[in-house]
Image (cartoon, rainbow, N blue to C red):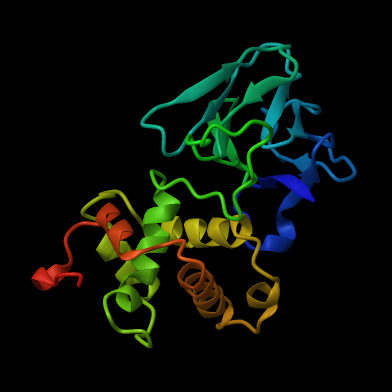
Length: 247
């Protein structure tokens, strides 16, 4: 089972993503390599670095001679990790990250997802031994959870067969709590949720024009069936338009 997903710049489909399991490595740089990430820019070293999957997080090796790499947490209000030239196996704890490479005056970036992050209950009831792994590890402080809550909101508000909101509607619903939200950010989070919740590949292989709808339906169906999103969770959104009250 893969534990880390590398999303190349301008990635257009899940087929372009690179997936590695714990202990496996991916090289990245200007030179093409089997199974690696090629970044075609003359400011990027031929062998720029290496990513290693390690359980629920990953390691970054900076193989450049003189460039510091920055790994950003897109949801961390500026939280980042700097990896200096020559540093090997620097641990990156973020659930999803953006690796930024300085390249001859440009800043190039690609994403790395670690969807296998797990969370356990603090309460152990006096028991010893290993905790039970949660079936679905969701962090309710992340933006992807707000996107999931907005997707589920119409059906949680007493309309079990309500049509799901379109991407533009989701962006507008999220804007009060996420002012810089965009269509592409909503698409990105829906894709990430589909990976994180281990949906079957059906929505990804559906015919063009139905892929996103199928993915949204699958996400909402799973979330509501297993109570991953409840009415109380709608608090991550702004109050509903028109003063609608959740009963």
